[in-house]
Image (cartoon, rainbow, N blue to C red):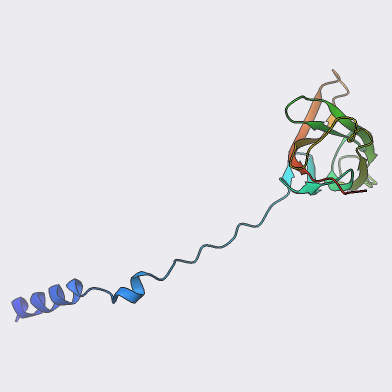
Length: 149
């Protein structure tokens, strides 16, 4: 009786799937881009590898001293800085998060001969009050796509 049961289990395990089922692709969800962040700064837009033109908006949340974040855009290869601005957060109490936004303008983009697809680096950070270092830096790689004008 036990031997017959083992034979039946062995036969059941040896049955192969029909060939059509073995070709069904497994479900692989598309990853959702997530905002990049440090301990005190989160960049919500643009997301990593987004296409940007000569003018674009950056938004985020920050918990920073005096509600000031510094935003810099530079060329990945040469390090040339195309824009650097500061933005105020909407935080109403010290130590709390507030929203920030700024418009980045690449006024020198034509002079720098930026080509479509050039990799740019967006840096968002605060300046340390004790030694002037750039702290809580968030780095977002972007791709340049000029708007024909």
